[in-house]
Length: 298
Image (cartoon, rainbow, N blue to C red; front, side):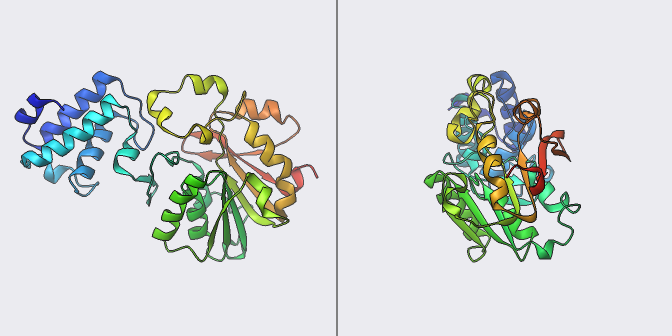
């Protein structure tokens, strides 16, 4: 920890300036909740001091105790030196208004699917109350399964992951939301543990990072489980496995929605015969695609 900083910094404004400068000089990579150093500095400082995350202004000139300054500087130091994503430092991540516990056993939630689940599927699922079964493949922290359960209030939700450690995190989040009676967590290699169960809605944010992209990931992303990121040579290995069997697990009017990041070109090269519907998100119209059961091969 910087001893000079510990002696010289007195207020949140001081710490915010110091953290933003350190983050800029270190050329940190963002994308785990914020997209710039100032916002991330503000978030880490407020969280560490147990202050409201949306109320920076009233506290800017508050003078801090030496112990408080020391705690904040320790967090800043870990962010800069170890390149730990902010979400792993605070053990929380947000999807819209939903907060989730996270640690290094799962990737940090940042899916564009959450908003689509809440507001973007009406054309295919016009009556949310009639969605009786839903599936989240590669559930990780359980975040999308939880959003599905909160959106489709009559649905029984299965949440699948091959990682037992990820499911431990998902279990904590499901319990935090009081959804243990509606979300079933299963350790399974995709559909392997589901027998003939069928669903009105399947969602998935699978590993889709290509092998070349894996080699170029910033240090922050290397703290995340490689199992949850690595999608094989072209990023489509898990997507191929999912679409090969999805029809067998969709109800007659069911749909599957898959997030593939920046992999639309690779997706279309891998599935030239599929005419997927590309859904608009805050990141554009090539991040998430939807397929109806009848579009998938028997």
